[in-house]
Image (cartoon, rainbow, N blue to C red; front, top):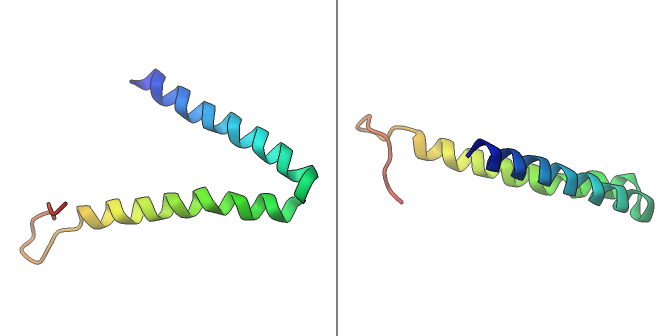
Length: 66
């Protein structure tokens, strides 16, 4: 499982690196920065949803809805 995780992480890093290398000369630095916000926002939303699911409800038990 660890090797699969490493493959995904490093593969996405390579994809991001090559993509930013193509965006920079074609559209400029501001576009590269704005495009980088998309995965950042997705990660923040995913973390917020995961944290929300882990918060205890009023009775003190973790939420199990969904």
